[in-house]
Amino acid sequence: MFQIEEELKKLPAKPGVYLMHDERDEIIYVGKAISLKNRVRQYFQSSRNKGAKIEQMVTHIARFEYIITDSELEALVLESNLIKEHRPKYNTMLKDDKSYPFIKVTVQEAYPRVLFARRMKKDKNRYFGPYTSGGAVKDVIELVRKLYQVRSCNRNLPRDCGKDRPCLYYHMKQCMGPCTGHADQRAYKENIQKVIRFLNGDFQETIDKLTEKMQKASEEMRFEDAAEARDLIRSIQKIGERQKITAYGEEDRDIIACDMDESLDLREQDAVVQVFFMRDGKLIGRDHFYLRVARGDTRSQVLSSFVKQFYAGTPFIPGEITLQTEIEDADVIEEWLTSRRKQKVRIVVPKKGTKEKLVELAWENARMVLEKDRERIRREEGRTIGAVHEVEDWLGLKGLNRMEAFDISNISGFESVGSMVVYEKGKPKRSDYRKFRIKSVQGPNDYASMEEVLTRRFTHESNGEFDSFSRMPDLLLMDGGRGQVNIALGVLDKLGIRIPVCGMVKDDHHRTRGLYFDNIEIPIDTNSEGFRLITRIQDEAHRFAIEYHRSLRSKEQVHSVLDDIPGIGERRRKALMRRYRSIEGIRDATVEELAETESMNIGSAKQVYEFFHPNK
Image 1: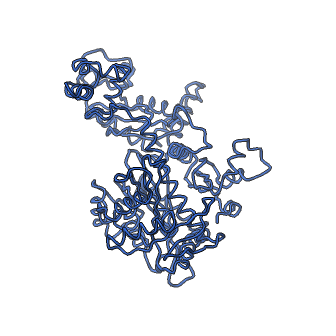
Image 2: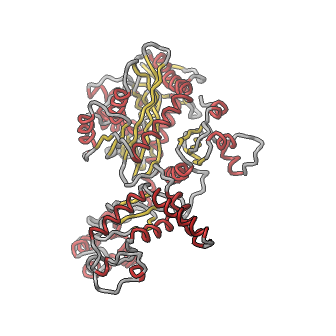
Image 3: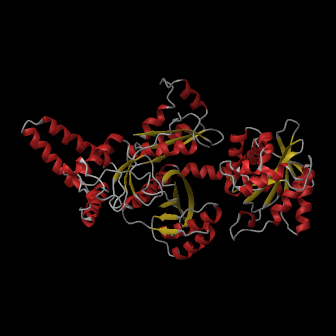
């Protein structure tokens, strides 16, 4: 399906980030490149000495993907974001969680300051960056303080005006001296606006002045002054390498762009929609979708249709959706998304600035996919959809789009749980996966547990028109044979629901053997794509159930008797254990002593005391 040699030929000679995936489709490595074409190829060249770790990693690479950027700087910051988000196995993880610096303008203050910051916060101040050179950031902060006479002190103004002598910067004419109480606040804020324009990229005038100063100092043989001006120019130029990968705010935002290309078919044309996911102001991932659309459909129509379908099926909706072009029904879609999110959702089409550049970058990636990956994506879709058609032929069914598979997991009856995984068009739809903690069954009874899970699934009240439970599957897949199938059919019959039910039967070695349907076991070709699809579904349902069961076991192992006391949460539990060291010490304490503990009050102290002394 993914032929590495063929995909290497398609790599662009552009800067960007590449992501290596293993056979389970997990990201195992993230890297950046000035030229994706040259860098990624090096991993697969046998003549190069790559080192033991990389040699081992290459043996696990099943496929790779890449995101093109406009500069090496953007690639560098995007690489950092993706490593922190996915924590790939073969990347070196920085213990100090290195971050890139920002310039912060404290616009919320009466007399704002220009500061060095390591991360953005939701504090309504203005942030610029991130930048890769901390030294350049400090140089530029120092420069704008000199040019625009903004303060650098930590005094609380205007409260502390006139309480102390002005500092040396005031006497050096590098600060307007608002601490003296004589600075014009309007003039000061005008200077701050000039600083903001400067940091937004309007600094050619400043560079020209520094260049003139450098040349004059050089002619007068004041080479130290000339070198200082030269270094300031270089710092400004580094700051001028603006990048879009981290935005100037911590909003959650999706950026969506589309590229279209007419095919030879007179009825249809190809399109690719690229979605960039920005979370907390950082670009942390992307996804692309290959579409076949009717000839004559406009980009606006394609985007409108995509937005409605995409956000109907995803559990998370960001506060802002940034589109490449206007769509006709934007107001209605905004209202619908707002009702789903329970918070305001805005659809914006930027005309300039960072957001517009991000849309351009998304479009460039969509165009790259359409040009280079069209055939591979078609093959992949043919493989997944073709596998579904094989399953349809085996079962004598038509129109299988959504398949739901169920599994039960327990160890000797301990914490029985159920899992529901969903596949649409042969691909997992993880946003619709669900976990069930068995409530009504005691002990290891898989049949009764499955009956509870299916009853809860098909009687669950939908939270909205597009809740995942509101969509009925076209086929139920049970992890087992006749017994599990009959349980499912019994639940559906009791609820008056008609859905085909199929069992995934395993052999004595726990490998998929066939399908149980309509009271017969259907043998299947183990070399077919349909067989591989059924195996993937069965393994995924089992993995999801085991993973949930493991998480419950780990929680149970750290359970404390204090967790059973009303009003005692994690903070109070830790405070009690720090003071008394043991449960016995807490039990022997008086109400007054308990109330004196950090985070405790008289009410919670009584709850603890009464829990250990119920008869007093």
